[in-house]
Length: 349
Image (cartoon, rainbow, N blue to C red):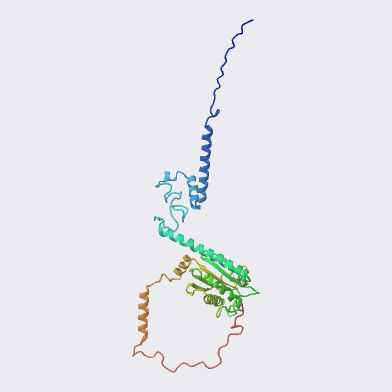
């Protein structure tokens, strides 16, 4: 029997490759991708929060990137550069100037400006709350709900405006007069306590349509009528709970500011507007009317009045009478009548 041949022993060694053929390169690529996405979203956020003037400055900078290098200047963010810098509120498209600042001066935010901005925000929030309260009152109050189409409430630059417009079927005032109808009085009676809930001052403005009186404005006119109607509303509001000290002004605009400009004779133009003023608007009105800025001080005015009163109190004894001769003739006869074709009575609603 033949002897078995020894079999060779074969040892196989498998070489293990960690992470395949590419190693950790995918991690670097992923990190670059995440960084690029973060930079993209950061760019979108900066563009969204930038003002129009800042975006225009950036666009001009890329159009002329060497302007500062060629023409000089302390830097791209200086007031002499096309790229805007400085505050977020700009009053011009070129330069480092904040809102309300004077070119050449430096404006820094401080506690005072922060308080003013905060006060304006609170004022606006209070007016928004008052608007919601009035709208809720109109919905639940049957007397106000019946006139919902004639009550217009909106927020303007100067405050909360409440307009009560007229209607052919239900006019607010008597024909050609300033006497409120009973249902119109109820409207102002109901909203007066609500208006008094805020410390804001109130402006009342009366408006009429374009129908004029027959005296061509020489006598009682649309200005008188609108002013009388605004004052009649003021009286009802004060009688119903509005503090009279909160009434800043009562104005008659006549027909110069129609609500429906396309139809000057529309009943919508006959209205009374109540404006609950913001504090800044009330301050501006007072300044415009000269209530806070006078040509002379109060002591000077008192001295002038006192000197004028002393000069006219006792005329000198040697002064001659101003009239010499018989007295002027008296008018005897019937009173003067208006000219033919001219009516002294109102002929318009």
